[in-house]
Image (cartoon, rainbow, N blue to C red; front, side):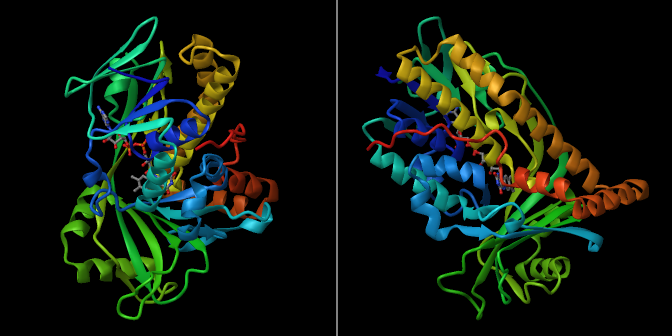
Length: 411
Ligand SMILES: Cc1cc2nc3c(=O)[nH]c(=O)nc-3n(C[C@H](O)[C@H](O)[C@H](O)COP(=O)(O)OP(=O)(O)OC[C@H]3O[C@@H](n4cnc5c(N)ncnc54)[C@H](O)[C@@H]3O)c2cc1C
């Protein structure tokens, strides 16, 4: 039997960030991940990058992780939004809302490595068990109890589900969910290109789905004379995406070059292509007795604006704040008041973001002429009305509902 204060089911980026945040605050955590480290650390595991907004970056800084990725994080200084290359387009400059960048592009493997390194430093408080798959979860009056498929048992005052969109812990805690497929798949790859990106993130809304190029740090060793790098997130109708995944690299690059145009010069792939089917899933509640949900187990959204993990980080900051406060007051970390406050703190932001992203997908993945006219009118308005522009820029920076509670660093 393994005892701790908080047991986290799921060691993805969400679960590991929560583990580091709680460990840095001196709370004893066990994080369970069903995959072996040899798999989660392999190049084939995750080809994505994350646009970490300014607010969530503060969460990583507060738990001592940001120092470890800063060197590899590329700041976003400008965001350019186009609707199938037709005017009007929309351009946001970071200095319109302050000195900080809109966010940083970090590749997920770098982020995972930094989280693992920080967790190793916090070993007095954090244990990651992997492979360790949850089989059952029992949340009783006195404790939460997770039984693993290999028979081991972990007990805690609170269990947290960070086990992704198809969360089994959510189901076992009796929390329902709803959602739908978008019929789109995102193709993700790292691009090498000829012309520097000038720290500009570009999103072009095409009828099949959005195509984004996100600025990355330059390659240490380029190929073919190309050293500048961007991350590609190209969402397409699933049948078209499957064809793009199976065609040879030359055909893919030609199709891509046509969509991206000339602004990055010649482009080529740095590594493999990855495919992610796109859907929405949201939990009906965030808590049950001695149980809380964070990150994609609570809400999985379309990556149209790169907000999925950012939203999860805001859950993590809010839950950490409640647990740190409870620790200081000497309270049981599974106390219903803590869970009620967490649910209340996250209800509005999560609901607004899930709804907002769903509306964006429907509005922009649409070639119906009146819808097209309306959204181009909307883009024109946002481009020209200062307060509206600033509102969207602040949302992109993840500033709403953040304000991390300062946590003492230990370890
Ligand atoms: C194409 C694409 C681009 C994206 N870009 C961005 C972006 O720019 N910015 C951004 O903020 N977000 C972005 N996102 C979203 C972001 O990638 C996710 O929000 C994030 O990776 C989810 O992390 P998670 O830890 O919540 O879930 P997951 O990554 O799903 O992790 C869940 C973990 O739980 C483990 N697990 C599951 N069941 C069990 C069990 N029974 N026992 C033990 N372990 C279990 C799994 O093995 C997994 O490791 C993007 C998503 C996509 C698809």
